[in-house]
Image 1 (cartoon, rainbow, N blue to C red):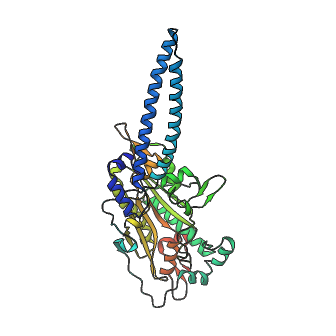
Image 2: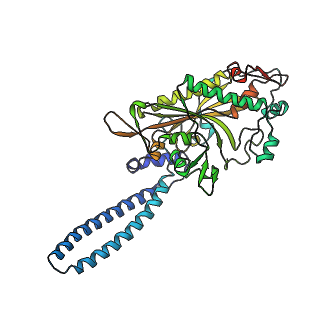
Length: 422
């Protein structure tokens, strides 16, 4: 959420952010409601002050045995007016809070303004495109031939858009998760978290999934709980409504969780294979940092994700997202896209973003400096990495002519020394 004072003083900048991110928010209505709510609050305060003075006058008249009935009746009318204004204030506040919750974060100054994927900017590229002496197979054919991806059984159990990995496929995904966790913990200094997979509405609101993205979320009707779309949600809420001592910053956390997404707006996309699914595993990195260092910390976060791809010997590129491709809450986002030779395109395996104080304001996450004043922290998060697209690019990149898969050297200790799946 943006600072309300900032919105009041910089309506043109906020309006531009709304346009650049292709969001639809009536900022004029927001400002109108803000003005109205402040006027109503002022009126209530004035009437309360009037009633307080009258109460003192009534007490004085009664003490002096004088008639105070006219003033008493007058204050009853004032009390009724205050009650009516309080009801009006609550209604305005509800509308105002809902509208302001749809205002996106302001893109950083160096974020390219764009209308779609074509306007993203490639920042760097790593690795050489593998040259095959055979036509590389797509992961769905590899998985079927090796018996490690069983899409038909997944559909039988849950419906379309779900994954079932079997045998060495399940083992490979588990190895990838453990490898990534160990790298981020031992080499990059992250603390592992195992959070709940079900969270409440306030938790979803703090990270910006609600109210805008509710249609994409799986929820339980009776308890009003949500299955997490990413570990970013519970982990960022670790410090909600708390104050972090400045000397503790930066705080780094990593979590491996299942993620659940309805993908309501992507009907018909990537229906073959396991590129786009409703449930998947992901290793997520989350940072709480000092505002002065957040953009440097973002670059370090991207490097942590890149280290995984390099260790897995996968060709990839780092892309800076344009305004319309970024998330609602992000100020700057880099996507890491690994090349999948079987499907012949890059697949997003990580998204690393700096949310500045946007999430911290919604979640009231602060730090206390040496001057004993509290300020909002900056939050960052990034996939390190997401499955199953990492699995896809590994299978398609390291496939052999005989249909087997060579396991990257860095991953073999997590596969009990297995060098090849075949």
